[in-house]
Image 1 (cartoon, rainbow, N blue to C red):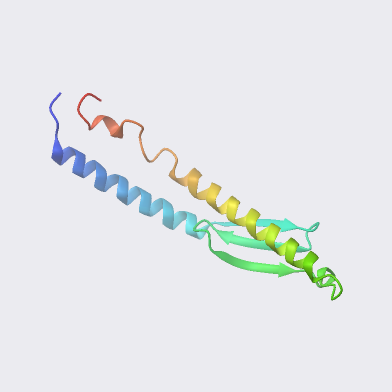
Image 2: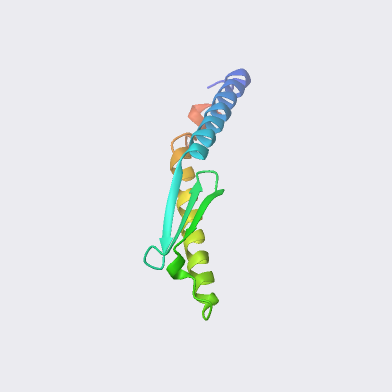
Length: 106
């Protein structure tokens, strides 16, 4: 099988375009996570950017600020994990395992 550099470059450009579109699509999608039984809600987009944090006033205990901090941290981490999962699901299938048979011997 003959190696076709032009075909490989076209395929690479197509894949780059598809990846960019998937990233843009994911950025428009929002994931949500809660902690403390819903006392803290965090929303993030598929790009991993936090877009909203909501704290129920009942979660604010001046005698226990560490609990609120823990709930916020837990919700943020879960939202970011969900955003990462969203991005991975958008990207899966866009990169063929053998690069579409473009490499010699593939």
